[in-house]
Image (cartoon, rainbow, N blue to C red; front, side):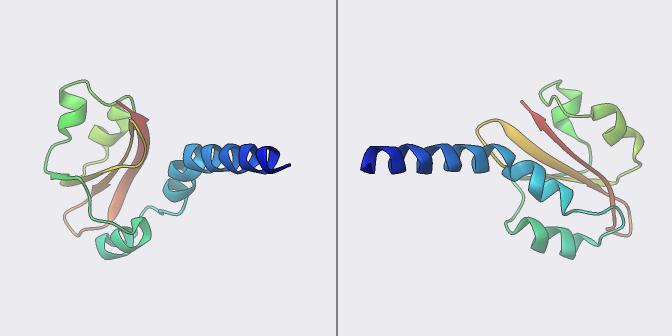
Length: 104
């Protein structure tokens, strides 16, 4: 019985770990201010860039085309899993104009 409960706990943990990035990304809304984005994500970004280097170096398998067309002047990048990254783009007024998930 204990083995069954342990296995169930492991399965639940793996499923939550796998869907957590999508849940977090869905809580971000276009137009949000940077401070609201930061508090929603709940941790400091891994990278802050004026150009999305993950796309220019072909290292991110997210929607680079949409990110680059968003007219963002700043990109924030968080690592949310083993190789999953959340990328947001902010305009010059620090409002969210792009959000996306992708693996590296």
